[in-house]
Length: 238
Image 1 (tube, rainbow, N blue to C red):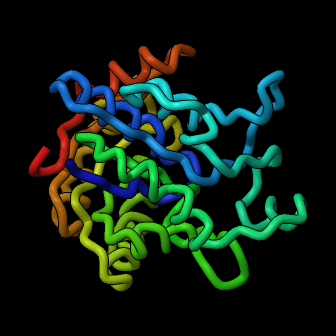
Image 2 (cartoon, rainbow, N blue to C red; image 1 turned 180 degrees about the vertical axis):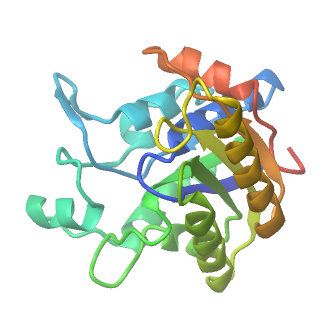
């Protein structure tokens, strides 16, 4: 039974792609799985209520299955920072409330559990608390998703330093290829630049690389997760 908190170097770094891919890989290995998105902004209105694509992707790789409200208890329609969305909705978010929701789910003792944050490490949920405080309260090691683009080395190093400053262990990092900065159909120059950035990340981040995910383009969440799983490793012990 292992649990990790998944964060990113930025919004849209690829946290959900990596998290759902790791959950798919864990399922291949016969583990029960649980993917949680405690707070999600940018949700769609549906007949069933607000739904977030990231949370749905995690739900699809959770086995045995759980209802959506268990995966994503706090959903906001505006695609803005959680503390701003909560303010607009007139509700109060707190780490204690989120931990209270997660406690019975973690008691299920699934073989492999991932809790995905929102945005990067320092995204606030209120005036005094960050969502990363969940990882601290629950004592979770962290998986860092690095969006591979120009500037990623700085973003990754600062994120790793913040995680360490909070007293948590960086269990590993994953590079996710984005359109921004490094072209998908890379020239030899772009490939050399990408490799140089990856070498720098390996040199400077105090944790193993758990995979480099190429640019994946498909509308099917399950296909995306399975495709990403081919490029990933689980942290040591899983």
